[in-house]
Length: 577
Image 1 (cartoon, helix red, strand yellow):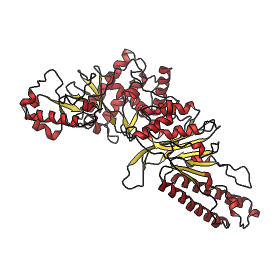
Image 2 (cartoon, helix red, strand yellow):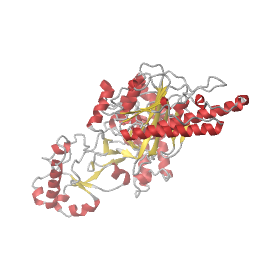
Image 3 (spheres, rainbow, N blue to C red):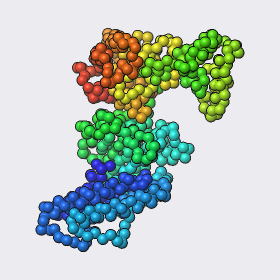
Image 4 (cartoon, one colour):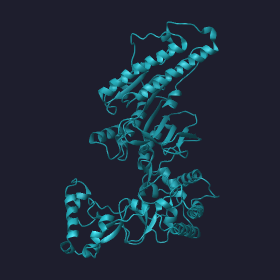
């Protein structure tokens, strides 16, 4: 916000400061924090200009009773919308206090007596629903109007019915079911400036706007309307000062039109750390320095080299068909129930090397009469039926209440050995952690599956090239990496690979497995601890990277993921042209 505000300051004369600022407008102002800070900093900057002018022109220094004429930043230039009456009153009152503090600073620094009374203007705070109000009826839409704010964070799945309708009404025919509630403020800001040449806006939002499936539906219309990203802060952790409030992973993005200044990009080595500005030719929708491409959902793999990746099987059982480690001995002791015990893995079990089982009664060896012969088995299935019967009537679990002995159907469940791909992994991993599993292991819905008879897919997914693509276009859970078959995998721009190079990738992938097997007692989480990867495993991944990089078109050895990202977007542009 401070960077964007500063660009609205003009100093046309060496003898008289002038603030060319029409309006600062926060359409989700709450108690007015953004407006307060903007006003305070602008007044402080104006004061520094006056002090500098006195240094340059000491003959003009004199006491004045008309200090008000020196103040060009007015409360009336600050507007906001707040949905509740009490925070709006706090915001308006707080602006009087910060004005008084700024006036005192002016008097102390320059010796001017600024009149305290009467109160001649105030911040314009409107009480109402920002998504239902006409912003142009409240604020002048001009090139020197600045919109800033921190709109409400409400996840895609957490929106109430009324909020879903508000989102649909704001986006109109451009509405997409994957958009977060916060994106309505971006659309309103874009529409607000539609008749204006220029204008700027910037918002703090959850980092979901720059990740996964929701990127194209938001940024496509913004870019089509002529906006570009003027500056961006990549993901950082923002903890509210409210008691018990959870940390939110945020980004900050600012937008302008028809301006030639270089964009500014800020990165964070740690989400709770300080930002570092990095060089950028252009900031794209994924908040990286790269071509302005939008990766959209795809039902089939873009690359002819990649086979299908599918969801695992959803239990939808309320935990009744899942057998935890402390329950295993009871089930195993029942000879009938034990016949249906199968290893069960979600992403957590694969990464951490944990054991978990399920009661699997979907194969041809299931005998319904076994339910009557095994009290343990019968109790579990009855409990599953009871749980499903209590679920929402429109959901899959309720629809499966008459077949409580089986999981939700999955026609893509692998019947041969497969590679298991966790749906979510830690953002600290240098490589995406995947593992080959036998067909006897049932994959849950937090584990994607892909048939991989020769190990080629394992090699591709285990490479630096893949995790670079994942970080750039994939979604996230907080800051953890979230794999997607439709966005990440199906858009991975892997060109056709000659058989000789393919075999080298397979062999290099086997080298990674062999390096892991040097320490079979370690889980994948331990193997890929970013502070403690073994030299042998690092060497094996380096060998894998060399051949996978070549498969993506690298002409020489690559030394950074930034180089890989450039190649990935070039390949994607070529393959989608």
